[in-house]
Image (cartoon, rainbow, N blue to C red; front, side, top):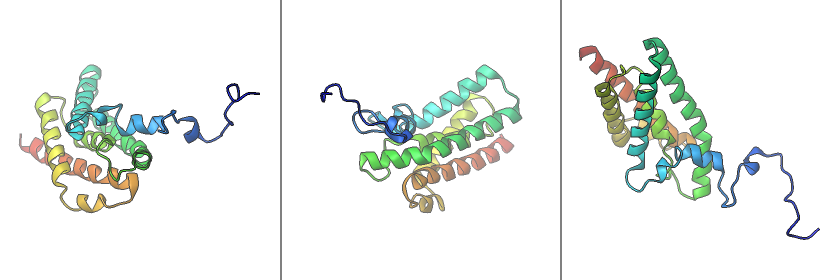
Length: 178
């Protein structure tokens, strides 16, 4: 058998079968960059938050869920994004050789969906949740700043989850008076 016809050794590792020839773990890069949004040149975190808001808004408008179903679905999406994001962010961080790389934006998606969990399906409420999330994500009030210091994907994700919780609470206060 020549080198041209030789097959690579079979591997049982799901990570090794998910690699593309550039040495990147495909699923992790797709999830971590939220399908490439994180690779946009300017403000990838803001673009990812905006994309998450738009996805939430149009999905909610298309399905017309009850309030309780919308809250449960939105929180579930935020939790799933977090659970997928932790290993994905860890892998992308390792493969890119950069600590907390800016192109990892699944953390913004998870935090944004958490922020939207109690919002009525109206553009003004969606934009309010977007604005509050970006504010808290950028300023990182305690303990979000401390969560950022956690190792790998956990630190990448958890500061944005905290920002999402802060934004959710701020939205609940505003919704109470608005």
